[in-house]
Length: 124
Image (cartoon, rainbow, N blue to C red; front, side, top):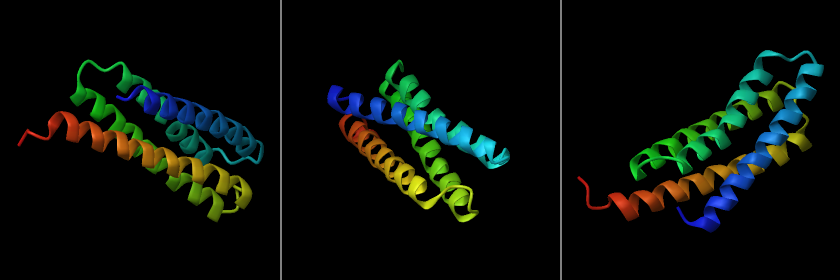
């Protein structure tokens, strides 16, 4: 993976995880335990899967791990929308988080697509 892109996605996913943890704490203070736990799990696992991908033993495993990170980012988007629409997450907080989440999705999509084209374009 391109070193510059690697740093961007690693930093962005880590910073996003910190924001998710912060919002999780706020949500549990509001006595919202179920959705907040789902948000915490999916939102923090994005970066963990990216780190696993970076340490992968093959390009195929790398793409697989980043694919999992992408799925977790999409799931996080779902929980953010649900929390906003159920009035647990204020619109301003939602907007900040969803913008970052969408950026992570775009970056992961780009990395996965580029890696597949570069390393697997000749496979059937």
